[in-house]
Length: 240
Image (tube, rainbow, N blue to C red):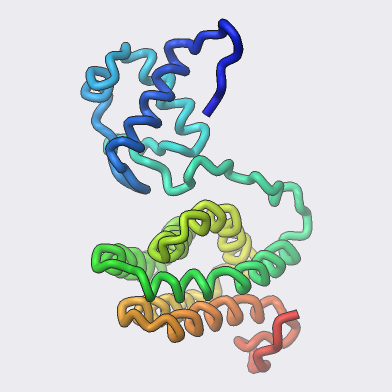
């Protein structure tokens, strides 16, 4: 949080931003949970509607909140992380970027899946089931599924109970979009099958199976970039 210096006083908007952040913490709102509507929130915080709107806009720009038109304002899954803090947009070799991000994910996400299997609640599993099934539906209808894919992997990280993992993975999950673009979305059936295997292992609270399912999911994707990917009859190769 910003520390004001000397006699410096926060503006009305800055004060409203701090109040909203405090409200989220005090109410225990988590990712995807909805805030009160604008009128109710203005009354709760004792601020004007125009001040509140500006504060909400700034929090959305900081990826702390997300506005869904006609629905409401929600706590963002992005955890206040900038959309591209590591400068992936400026890397011109997108195929190399996608492969290197997958290598990094191989180091992190199998363990995240194992933790999710150990610690996921019934509510967590229900959310994963919804995300998995709705992504399958989008794929079958040949509709964009990138956002749902990212939500599925982020939810797994959150289920594990490690407070750092959900903040780190949204940065890394830019690779999902790059991968889909580079492969032309060709591995849709494989995506459905491997995601279902990960879900089933987490549902069974089988940490080893969840680790293996996530590992194979990422290895399959990585090998899609190799000269003899498994999808063309090659063999799995060891991690570099």
